[in-house]
Length: 255
Image (cartoon, rainbow, N blue to C red; front, side, top):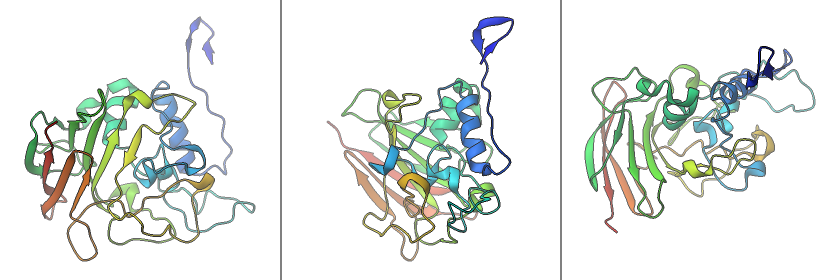
C-alpha cells in the first residue's frame, strides 16, 4: 500500500487469520521483505519439479505436515509449522535485495574443476564456503548452485514423519535468475533429484500438487547417491565430517 506521506513509496501489508500455518506466514513475509524480488519458486499444479521442500518459497513452506484434513481445519497445529530455510541464492541475493549477502559465504568457481569442503549453509559463515556456483555455459546468466543442507532448526520438521536417504546432504540446483517474475511463477530454480523415479510419498500430499523432492540430496551411506550429473556439470560427495561439512568434487565440461 502507498505511504500516506509519499504516494510513490509502497509498504507491504499482510492480512492473515490466526489459523494460517507458520509456513504460509513466513512465505508471504519473504515476498514482502524481498520487496517483490523474492518470487514463488513453484509452478502451479506441479507442472515440473522446481525447488520442492528445499525452499520456503516452494514446497518448503509446508515442512511440518502431519495430517491431511484440508476441509476440516484448523491447520496451524499440524501443517506447515516448521518451514524450510531459504536456498542460499534466495537468502543471499534476493532477500532485501542482497542486503544480507554477507550471511552466506559464496564461492563462484571460475575454473572447470574444484574440490574442497563445503559447510552447511545454515551455520554462520566461516573459512569454508557454504555456497558454490558455476556458470552454465549453455545459457548466459544461468548457473549451477551447490549447498549442504542438514536437519537443523526448523529443517528438523518433516512431512508425514518421513526421513531417509536423500533427505539431507548436498543439494544441487540449476538457477536461472532470468525467470524471476513476481506474481507469475516461471520456475527459476530446478533442484536435481538424487533419486529420480522414486515414487511420490503417500498422503499427506502438499497443496496444489507441489513437488516435494524429499529425497533429492546427495550423500554418502546406505541407500544414498554420492554422485550426479546435470548437463555439463558432474559432482561427487567424497567425505563428510561430524560438523556437517561435505568434501565434494565438481567438474564442468569444457564447451
